[in-house]
Length: 528
Image 1 (cartoon, rainbow, N blue to C red):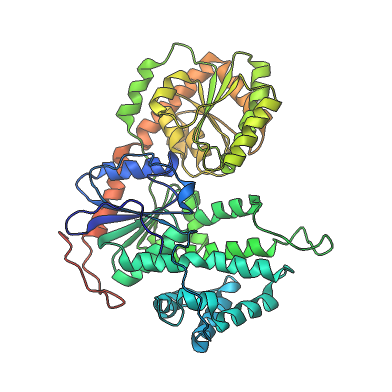
Image 2: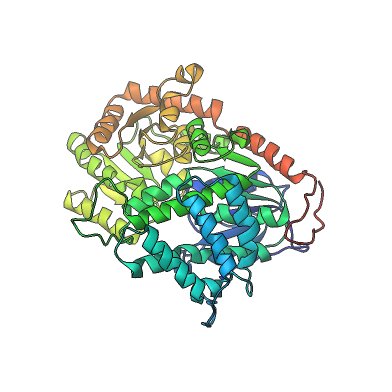
């Protein structure tokens, strides 16, 4: 099992809410991590534990956030590290167990697996993952039954000619399952669990719900399966070994399809197990339902921001908007930083004094960050496009004229709300809830006016001209500023968000103790 490189525990080894976090707080800045930090600090009377899951230890540096005082436990696990790989041993494997696994996989392969199929996997398969039992990691890695099963599946279904790549893809894909099962066995007791995505963290939530009977809350900022699909389509590490004569442009390469089906199944298992399933806005809630979430358990809770803190920054603004376009976010493909840089070429042509600032960490995808810097140089923008790294948003807001968001996928971006509160309009792509944030949701909201402009995805020319139009028209810019301030003050404050989450937490924390599953003894939780 991956070991924690930092562990904090309080006397009694329990917490009110255990947060299950995949690749976010406290080691990645901005976005979802900022929201997690807000939630923890917003409920100082509750104790929180954090179970952080990442890829590999070297992919993360030091923490980006100081832990709030009410965080009483932190442990970190790296799912792509295998420090305790079982010793190779000859094994036939349990034929009956692999036959059961085959039937469940067959039911889910066609994307028609039912709740009962997935419940059967948790009920029948997961208990056998424990070391020494019929489907432990050693049996998966080394048994004859595992080899025969993988070979059979390859011959029946794989459209890629490479068995070697298929074999290692299956092993890489499934290896974290045993780590997650061990985490579920050893994680300190909690009164409820809160996962901030589906995926591996959501699957861990499903395991914990099954083991303990304690409530599970799911909050999805973006839709995890959708974002993983984008990542997988953009990835270069997934091989497609078909010859030019075998390739069909309408057919997804087999290994990509395997990964997509895998994350879809994890997502459905998390939806099945969750007592409450939160989306940030209605379009994403409907997407959750379409992906298998029970509609009656879904609800919307919009992001909120610390309005008094950000509103103070308006006093620091100059009389006229600075000709500075600022993109605040990680330098990664999903943020489409390249489109922003290309847009800056047109912006500078039309508005020579303009600058483009990119404020966000570059260490998550260093190759992509290098490509972005290279594009800036190739467009002779090295003096106009500035890579600032991670910045305190309060220091930036008084100095910029527009917040830019060029992403190809978003949910309900906190940075737009923070910009509005600080008096900064925005230009963004037509993703997630951005159209709602710019133009309003209903008639009452729309009557507040446009707080910027929405443009198409990957359209640098449209992005540039929308930004120049706003910066070049002082009356229009101030109208957009006023609309943004009014919108955030009316609909997107901490008080509104915390009130709705308080109701969810109180329901979970005061739930009658459920029957403890898998033979695990109940622990003496406080309160409730």
